[in-house]
Image (cartoon, rainbow, N blue to C red; front, side, top):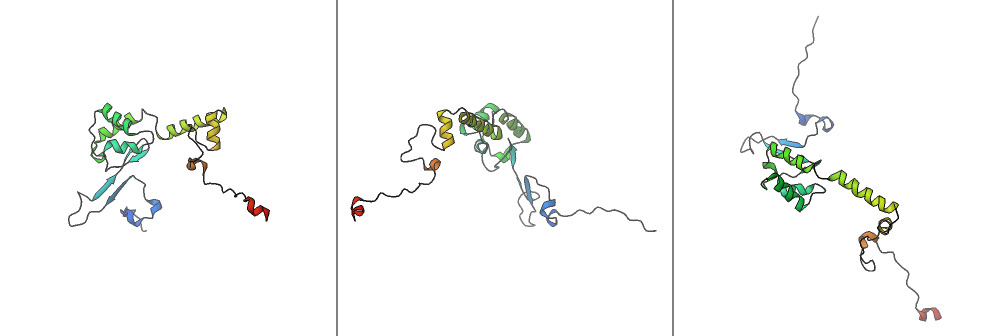
Length: 171
């Protein structure tokens, strides 16, 4: 009677179909034999802060601005609060990334901020105030003139038929 033994054999991920590969935020490429980059090949990891993957190759001050709700002044304020140097994002240590995540989580960002603004606009529409009516009609809200500009909100020009001249009506 023959017994079957189960032997596990490692399988290269490149031979697996795309649907079975794990979805990580890091990519690694094998190093070439001659002059490969670093030890073990090129490795690209994105830091995820506030639900957004911020770029590695930029300084922290500018990388934080990829998060909706954090602009130039707020990113500078975060760095000042944490006493961080404005170094390249990929050079941050794990402890610095964790403290940066905690500091950013104190602010209203991304989905919460978008939801807050959407609810505020819906409230204005509901109470039918001037600003709400302008939002509903798709016109400028903050007092801009609409005779010449504001094409972004009004859309394409509607063609209006020219009036016939009096000389052509007499014929």
